[in-house]
Length: 181
Image (cartoon, rainbow, N blue to C red):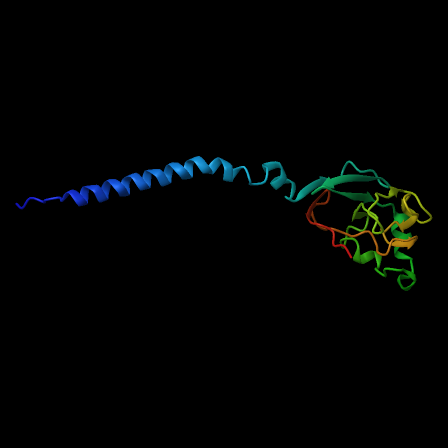
């Protein structure tokens, strides 16, 4: 059996490599806390997740305001009279023409979900107020009907409708922000 002879240079090269590898691992371990603190907070990451809302607690004619992704949204349980008033509007007479049926989910016309920021300057309108029984923005006088459509005042567009789905007859899941003009 032949014996393996190591030269002094081979051992020195191995020691340099081992020392360099240990220094690299140690340096990475020391720097990692500084790099990981740059990541967003877990609460911030969760804030972008879809939100589910229980509709059973909202009485007919009532509404709630929720915050999702740092923005307010209205969830309104419309009465038959509100639905009829919204459906009977001549769409051609609207500044931002959109039929009521395009703003609600088929088979769920009583539920209207909209962004809760006036499209004029972003104020939060007051519910069940204004000339059309929907929302009134006290900042500059915009009036929205029971479908969240602009009817009077400086707001240029309707209250945006976010992307949402019905999980059941009494639960919705908002999955996407309302599109803005």
